[in-house]
Length: 146
Image (cartoon, rainbow, N blue to C red; front, side, top):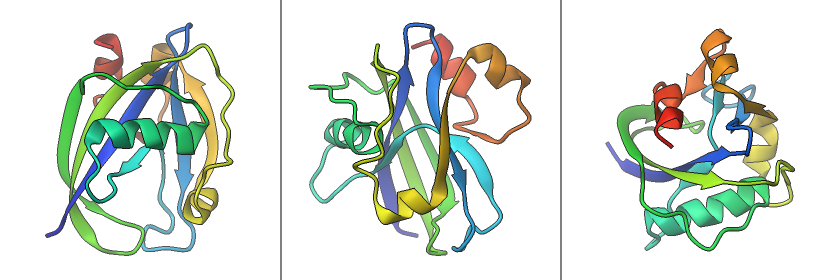
């Protein structure tokens, strides 16, 4: 199984809400699946997790930061990609605090435009109360330590 490294971001506003994107798959191997997840994505050739986090943050939100600091968590799991390929996903999570809650879609790929249906700033109370699928599964715990 191929390994896919990715950097994910806990983007937190002054109200301690976290930014999540709503992914809805309709025309790929994950058709019918829907979940909320943090911004982030795969590393490019030769890229570090930290550099990927800075790049992905800008591409998916329009927010610019010089660096992201140390990773606060890592997940390893088998994951099916929209192409149908199953990979060993290794995700490292980074925290970014921001005063800017405006999300720009200008850097999105065609795939992101198709599957990222919405975004929302979630409080811990809202995360606890929702029946929606949220990734990562330890998001609330991660937020309390961020």
